[in-house]
Image 1 (cartoon, rainbow, N blue to C red):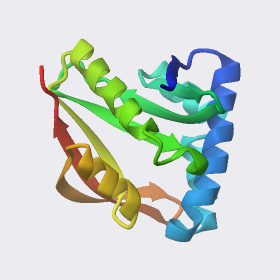
Image 2 (image 1 turned 180 degrees about the horizontal axis):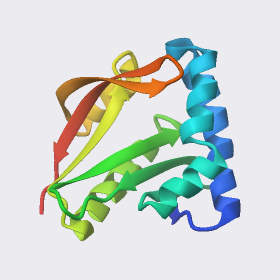
Image 3 (image 1 turned 90 degrees about the vertical axis):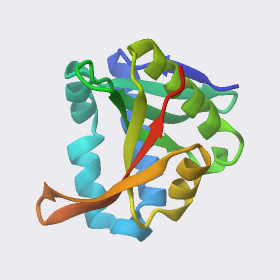
Image 4 (image 1 turned 180 degrees about the vertical axis):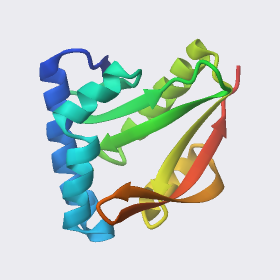
Length: 167
């Protein structure tokens, strides 16, 4: 069973940024291209960006297993609303299909219960078929399509997916 370690220290933030660089370059280049991957890594997944997100309330977690650091995820609690955002969930390619995603989802759902959230939601690139299928198997349903301008001529062309959290 993988361990979920809350990211609080600079070394952990740097580890998340390094994982992001590796995972994003392997997975997203065929979907959105190298230029957009580079832009998004710098804007959203660099060490300074992650530190800013944590300071603003994001909870980042490193996923550690016998093979070392194998992934990361982040949630954004919403104390004034019914839902918590699963902002990021990324696992190294060689560690997928071994139950790591299910372990992360179980952790996220338990954390949502602790926060009093009645649902968890996420956005996923509409052309990212593998993760969409995983989220559907995990009980998420597509609630809407979103196209968001993220600057420099790039957009995120996503589905918003939602899952109700049982008590």
